[in-house]
Amino acid sequence: MKKNVPYLIIAPGTILLLFFMFLPLVNIIWPTIFTETGINLNAYTRFLTDEYNLKIFIRTIRVSVIVTLISTIMGIPTAYFIAGVSKKWKSLLMAMTMFPLLTNSVIRSFAWINILGKTGVVNNFLVRMGLIEQPLNLLYTEFAIIIGSVYLFLPTMVLTLVGVMENIEKETLEASETLGASPFKTFYKIVLPLCTPGVIVGSILVFTGTLTAYTTPQLLGGNKNMMMATFLYQKASTLGDWTSASVIALIMIVATLIVNKGLNLIAARLDRREMNHA
Image 1 (cartoon, one colour):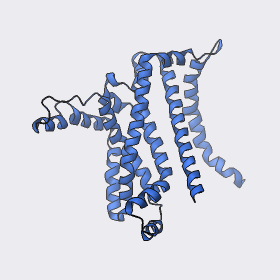
Image 2 (cartoon, helix red, strand yellow):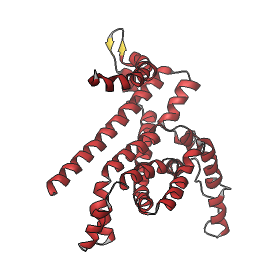
Image 3 (tube, rainbow, N blue to C red):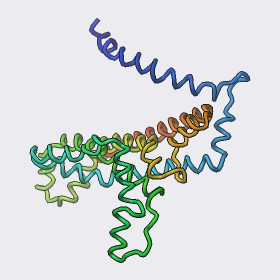
Image 4 (cartoon, rainbow, N blue to C red):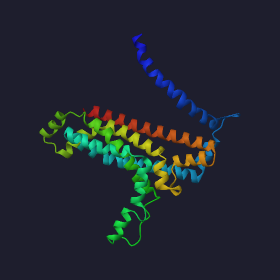
């Protein structure tokens, strides 16, 4: 009986996921693959061979990868600093990190519109400093989407890494310093390898979030720089083309699974290298 307790505990959640997420998803995607004549992938072939559709897909992957890389590069030193301060300052810094997550995504996007617009903070500053004569086109570009997405998902990366770095024993870092390693070498040789699981998890969360985000790309990128999520919404709600929307949804799911699998393989390879060096 005790052996069945874990299964009984997860049963309610599994049933909810099955009936309210998995089955509706299968119901939408099934007609795009299986037809009266059997398996038919023409809808996916048409999507992937259309230059306009492919451009949107490539843009989405490119932006998601760039946002993930920037969030990782900025998140690792930030999390390392937060993890090393006293509890009093750590609580304050964690609250400041979480603050953007407590603000509605629409409000955040409108704030960036005021910052990046032609009459926004950045252009006004550059014009007044005499660095430019005419306002730059910063808004409704990939650059704007990347900036807004990094602001949106960087806290997720930081919070994930702080939890991992807090578990690194101080004795390990002290031993490294005692043996003559510089702070930079300690960070590179010890902290980075030990926080690899957190980097992988954070990267998956940031990449998936950027890939599927709707509000930020729509408000900051506009229709000229459409992403897959906004493209899906246009097909389903504006045009009523649910078949194309289902195709887009499955392509996004597959792309996410491939990237997640790739990151997990990288993590596994790094773990094997560490064991071999040990």
